[in-house]
Structure formats: structure tokens, C-alpha cells
Length: 124
Image (cartoon, rainbow, N blue to C red; front, top):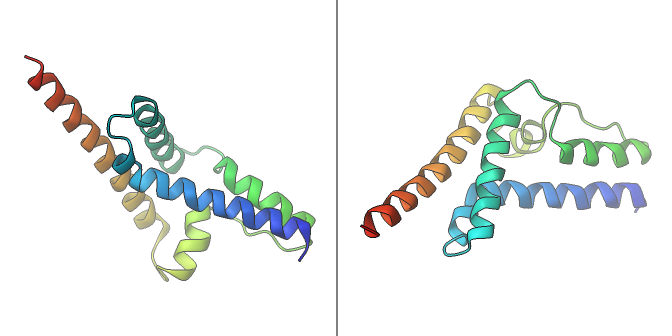
């Protein structure tokens, strides 16, 4: 296997882990303040990168660069649309994927807000 292709696959794995972290990170942040804040920052960043006209996710760029060096035609467009839309959700519009991704992030932020309110009410 070409080393550039292997590097691209490693970055793809990191990208998938980041998506899982964003979607499920609230499950592992109980009583871990550093992880909690890291997850909140990840959630806010994920919402912003999806809804604002910013450059693509840095992990997407890091994945495409070695593909180009491997003389593959790197895909264009967002990571989620390329991999998940093509394999799991065929024929789903990108806007729907963005809405679902943002909804997952907002749900997680809501969990943190609920935890915060409960801790504040319990301290009184």
C-alpha cells in the first residue's frame, strides 16, 4: 500500500473518531472538567464549521493532501457528505446532514446546560 494512501486512511480514522467524540462525548465527560470543556469547545466548533462559510474542516484538508500525493483524485466537498452520504445515507441533501449534525451538537450542549442547572439548584 502506498504510504500516502495509508496516511490518508489514518487521518480518516482520526476524523471518524472526532465525529464520534462530538456526537457521544457527553457520555464520557461526567466529573471530568477538562474533558467537559474540550467537548463543549468541540461542539461549538462543529456547529460553526457546518453553518458558516468557513474553509473546510482541517481534518478534511489533511486527508485530501496525501490522497493527492498518492496520485488519487482527492474528493471535493465536506467529509460528512463524501463518506457518510455515499455509504450510509444515499440521496440525502447536504442541508439535511448539516441540520442533523447541528441538532446532535445542540442536544449535547443541552445536556451540559441541564447538568449545570441541576448543579446550581443542588448547591442552594
